Length: 294
Image (cartoon, rainbow, N blue to C red; front, side, top):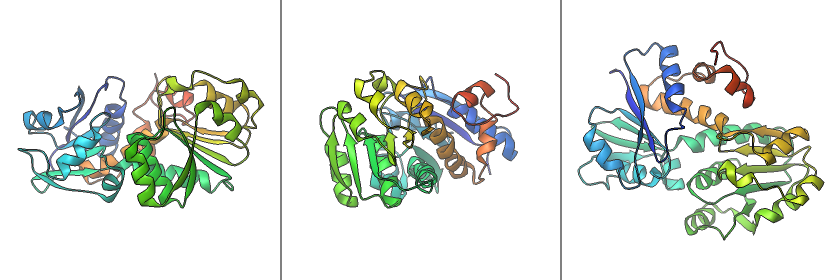
């Protein structure tokens, strides 16, 4: 197999830790000579990037390009050959991975499979009285597919101005019923056995309403899709009360395991990827330690 040549794309993308994770996995797998970088690509620019970099073998795709990545896999981008997309990408209506395969581009959504594994871990810890999903964008759609695969059929959706049409259509397709809450109503919904899946930026959690102090957070399980600005005040409150919290770095690592396998044909371990990150970052996100120093 040729050495992988990959890139993470999005806007913004400068903060992405994907290059460190993939390079560490390649080293552990003995895949020398590969190249992985970052490139800022604005909305509407993904097809042009691929046309201009014909040597690429794989892409990690972030916002706002996940819909474009799926369209490329479907063969809907002029001048590019699409060879298909996996079920998760089709259901979530977005792909976070593009891999060159059979002379064209294959689209996949490894967020769904990673979220499914992380949610399985949360759900076996004890009974879940309520599932709360925060946000209704692209990542929330992936989370909804994962929740449905884990058997969740009802949830509370926290949104500021109503759910997006694409999310509502997906929930209806999956048979997931919901009721909408505002962020100010969230503290009253938290309690023993509540599972929260947050897909919004960490900045959205800077405001802490008075009601949060009165909520019983000791048995709340909080799974976040974001890792910048960690920990935000809500996650910190859950953790200090004895609740269980996973930051978006856990999700990034978990989905990258699947991405590396799709791009190289070899599956790394989670620990392989963690060696690419500094010890202080792993400690901050409660991911253990490695031999790499910051």
